[in-house]
Image (cartoon, rainbow, N blue to C red; front, side):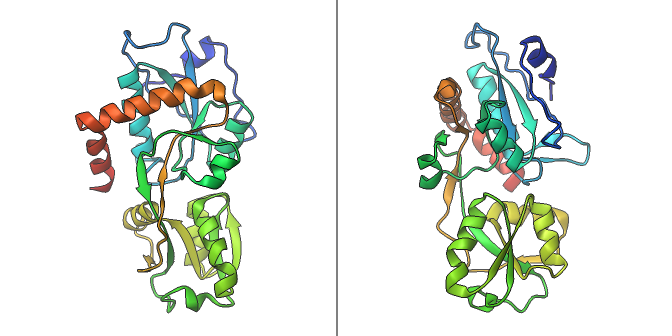
Length: 264
């Protein structure tokens, strides 16, 4: 992956990672000169660090995943340059809301609550559900077994919202974590009886990490699509390019190739 950091610095844009505690990874530079903007704009796109298979670090230290490849393909199609920053969910969201990043792509579900609170979403690029996961040897078979138990969720996610919507009915407590791996460890270590996570993320994490966890059948919600999000109408150009590029890569088969690479 080509590094766009030097281009970002040359454009005079400053972005501090000290408070975020994340690694910095630059995105591919698009090379379509006919479509590239004349102002040399480099779009700063913030993302999560550990959200397999949408964004994660492979065994060679490369930042990869469905979201990573989609942004690269769309940028190439539309001819824009970008800097993809791996910050973690909370820090990525904070960077966008503070104007230190132009957009967020991190398996962000398109929901009415987020739209009402000022999120501006692209067209949906992947439909997903949230589901409940327990330890592989757990006796829990459904929501009704959670009474008096503690459930783990990741702060600010749809999994957290889903769990909260069930909490009162089934009588469990919720504990919050900043990232998915720590949440999984809470279940594996017995600090939580279950966790709620996006279904494809949980499936990939169990399979690739050989985690002693199991997804319970009949616990998924209806789900929502993921989208790229901006928080400032001045960045509408990026949203428009993302939508146009997404439509093009769906039509030419690149989208299907990317999904197949990570999900089969």
